[in-house]
Length: 203
Image (cartoon, rainbow, N blue to C red):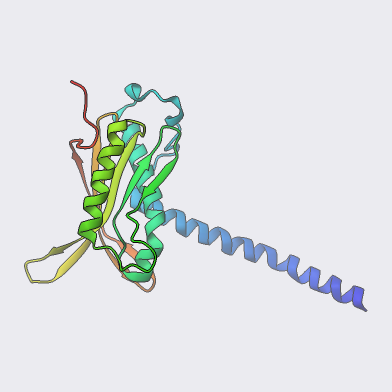
């Protein structure tokens, strides 16, 4: 009797596995599509050329793809906080030549109050300048929220992503967004090529 019961339970678990796997796959697809939406046009191999350590041979498209990859990694870091609090503290983005992404946060200390965005932005910018001067990373960036007042007096919030590559290209992404029903909904981004400020280019 016990053997039959165990067999029955085992069969029931096995029969549920496809359903569990499908649910897991769908959840992963939703997560991936959100990150890809942030990047707008993800590369098939966004960090494939990072390991070569030959920045002089990168094309503009390759460099921008690496900036997009870095932005996607940053998006994955802040999305949960954005859903839970409708905001997030600004933070920096760095990408090493071997494809290693690292965020840069301003620590507030144990039990401290939330850091003001302006203070965090200023501190991160200074740190990114110092990091870029070492030329030890291939890309840096910063991600933050900015509120824009419209003519009717209302406000629209935008996720601003400033990024630049050591090879000499920089991009600014600006996404209008809303957080509703536990999900971040993005509007069409404004993408602007800009001049590099962190990486000083040799003449």
